[in-house]
Length: 541
Ligand code: N01
Figure: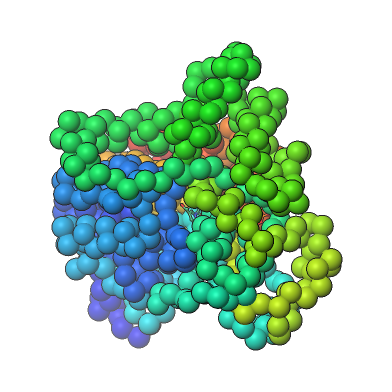
C-alpha cells in the first residue's frame, strides 16, 4: 500500500471523455487547475465511442450539436445536418488535437470507487487497474446512458447465434447482410438499427412493446459553402445563442399559443409545416404550448401524426401496431425518434413485427425466439436495443461513498435526490454533469453540458478567489429541488407514459421524475442563484 503522500494528486478529476468533460477541461485548465480525465473506453467521444451500432446518428441538428466554441465551429463543418457516429468521432479527434485534450486523458481507465477523505478534503479514487489518485474535486461526467439494460428473457444464454446489444456494439462492426435477424426494442437505438439493416437482412423480425411515435428527420447533406456563409454572416452565432433562451436548449421553442386557438384548417397547416416540411423535433418542441399539458390538445397532435404515418404504410396489421387509433400514451411523453424511411423499411414483406403485448416472448431457444402466438421464429442474430438503466444508473452503479459512508445508490434508496441535478449533500466537492434531475434528456446535450460547465467554471473561480477547500450543498437546497422537480413533472402529461424518463423501463424500479421538466432557462437561473449571496445554497469551508 503506498502511503498517502506517494499517491498521485490532482486538482480536478473528470470521469468520461465526452462533451461535458471536454468543455470543463478547457475551462478549468484556463483557470489554472490541474485537470485529468479518466475514460473507460479506448477513445474519446463519450456516448459516441460506444454508440456505433448500424445507423447510429444524433437527433439534434447542426450547428447546435457541437461544442459552443467559436474557434472550433469556425474550423469544423459537419457533412450531414444530423451527424452520424463516425463523423462525431472525427469531430472529437479534431477537438482533441485543437485543444490538446488527450494529454490529460487516461483511456481504458475504469473508476471502481471514490471515497471522500474528510481530513484532507479530497476524494480518493481507485480504478480497476489498482491505481489510486487524490482529487480535490471529483466530477463524474458519464452521461445518462452508461448502464445498459438487458431484460431477463428466459433462455437468452442458450441462443447459439450471435447476440448484440446496441449499447456495446462491436467496434469492428458486424456483417448482417443476408442474415435472419431478431430485433428487440424500438427506442432511438432500435429505430435506427431497423431502418439501417432492414434492407440488408434476409428476414427481420421486430419484437415491439410500445410503438415509437417517430418524426421525420429530414436529413440532408450540408453544403460547405452555405455553412461557411452562415458562419461568416452571424447565423451560427445567433443559432447557438438561441439555445440559451429556449425550454430544451434547441434553437426553437413552444409557441405562446394554445392548440384550440387555431381553426382546424390553420392547425392542420401548422402541423404540416412542423412535421412534414421542417421535420426534426419541431413537431414536439416548437408546437402549441399546451401539447404536453392538455389531453385534448395532445390528441389533436396525435391524430395528425397518425394520419401522416398511415399514409406511408400499406400493411394494415403493421399500421395498427405502429400507429393505433388509441395511443399507448399521450403524444411526445415518451421520447420520439427521428426516422429516415423507417416506415417504408418495416412495411416490406420480409420485415415482420410481433406485438409482444399480445404475443409475449416466452423464451429464447438455441435457434431463435418463441412467442405465444408465433411459436419459434428461427434467427441467426438477436439484436437487443433494450436501452439503459437510464439517468440514475450511470452514477448509482459506481461505488462513490459520501461522508457518512453510504454510496449514491444508498442516498437514493427511497428515491432520487439531488441539489439542482448537479450535486448532493453528503458528497462534498463533487459535481456531476448531464445526470439526474437536470434538463439532461429533455435537452440538446451540448447545450445542457455547456450551461452546466459555465456554472462550474464560475464556482471554480470563486473557489480559487476565496480559498475554498470544501463545498457541500445544503439539505434545504436538495429538498427544495426535489419538491420543484415533482411540481413541474406533475403539471405535465409526462407521468402518463411508461417511459425511462421516469424509470418505468426497469421492472421494480421506483417510478419518479428523473429529468427537470421546468426548462433550461429556469434551471440555469436556479444554479446561479444558489451561488449568489455568498453561496447561500452551500456549506463552505
Ligand atoms: O433505449 P430506450 P434506446 N421486452 O429505452 C424496449 C438516447 N439515444 O437505447 O418502450 C421488450 O429508448 C422498450 O420498450 P418500451 C436517447 O435519449 C439517442 O433506444 O419500454 N422490449 C424500448 O422500445 C434515447 O431515448 C440516440 O415498451 C423491451 C426499447 O427496448 C435513449 O438514449 C440514439 C423490454 C428501449 O428503448 C435511449 O435509447 C440512441 C422488454 N423486457 C440513444 N425492455 C439518438 O440521438 C425494454 N424494451 C438518435
